[in-house]
Length: 327
Ligand code: TXA
Ligand code: MG
Image 1 (tube, rainbow, N blue to C red):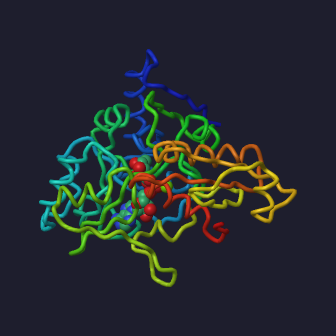
Image 2: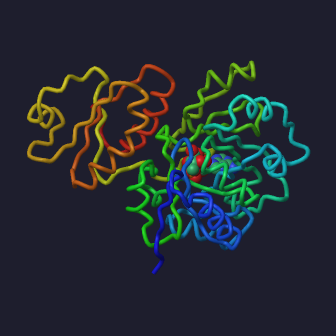
Image 3: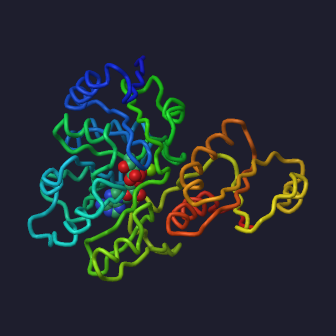
């Protein structure tokens, strides 16, 4: 059995533990670390058995590619094919990195196919979190890391989520004093003529368009089509409870009225309402997990959307409602 040590960046032995964790990473271990979006579960990107460990411990399908995290632009450049036109990549990196933007580019031969789910492209990002940057910098190797959660569950955004999913499975969990944004990074595909946002996040479509001075598409999957991002075909962000999305102007008038409106009389329902986009982004996954831990059968959410961060949060809420009902 593994003893899991939680190390906060305020711990007196933080530096020592970062050194120990980066030694473990170099020896093929898997480590959880904070980012500014959600927690990541990482391994050295070129170590096949370490990367397989990530897939195993998460229960993640092996064709779902990982984002490769870097701590410097130089590290990123080694991952990109020489013939790929890097001008827009560099413009976006200088505007948004370190930050919540993952860019899909044509991969160089340095990037093994077991990290990209067999694709010739790779998603790269430089996270904006001191602990993450320190761990990657100390390891001096790019770190492949999906969100830290058992596959299909909401991404981990609080220390207790990491313990719920990974206690006694990994040696180190690093935590940060900064509250994460709560939604995973924006993923933008730069490999086709028309750039496409495959997953909306805190770096918004209009911000990207502003930097590039051209229009960027927002990918909307059609059910019959093969998804552009392998991750899009998998069930995501879903609590065990069934999720209902209420109208943004829903006025809560007691549980009896809510249950009647949803047609779930006599069932347990957890009611959530958000009053800002930031509130919804920060708390949606944590609230889903809380409702599940208490054992609610249903979750009813009154969303709040007044900006592009709200739209990104809505994207996750809609996924959680898939095959379920919108009121
Ligand atoms: O904020 C984040 O991005 C977090 C933190 C830990 O950095 N990471 C994260 O990773 O959310 P993950 O693996 O949970 O989500 C990555 C998404 C998946 O939907 C995956 O299919 C997609 O990005 N993706 C990765 N590489 C891709 C590629 N080469 N082409 C298309 N989609 C890709
Ligand atoms: Mg994920």
